[in-house]
Image (cartoon, rainbow, N blue to C red; front, top):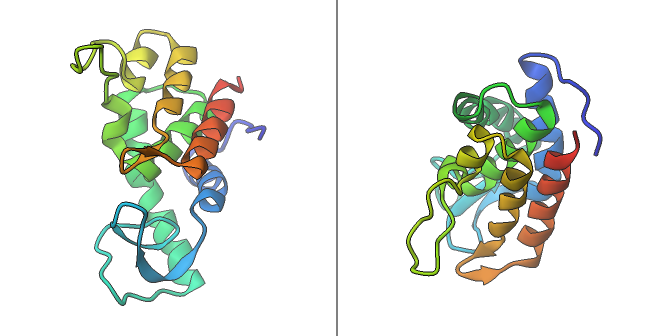
Length: 162
């Protein structure tokens, strides 16, 4: 997916929605995701309760309101990124939570290794390694999930598309 420089504001949000929404799908009735989190629309989890219902327009409006909640931290943690990496990392944050961007790889002893989070790597100028780090977030409930593996590969491909 080729991403041109998005306009400030709504353009980047629209590009993120265009990348993210096909991965999420759209469900109008609240459901529990693969790890039991109540979810609705295109991956929204905040405030979702069993039995909730939303229509397509409500889902689209909700996503447009919520994407900046993930893009904002990406931009604050890693200012000045090109749009392809902003979109890839925001998609990952939407799916995994913003904390995934700062999560460090575990060493052989199981302890986090300094300098190994996406944010650490980007800040060190190791953006290719940061993009590669996305691939490690392919599990849910401790198991590799084919859909997550494909999503992380797509994020990485976009991330590396300079």
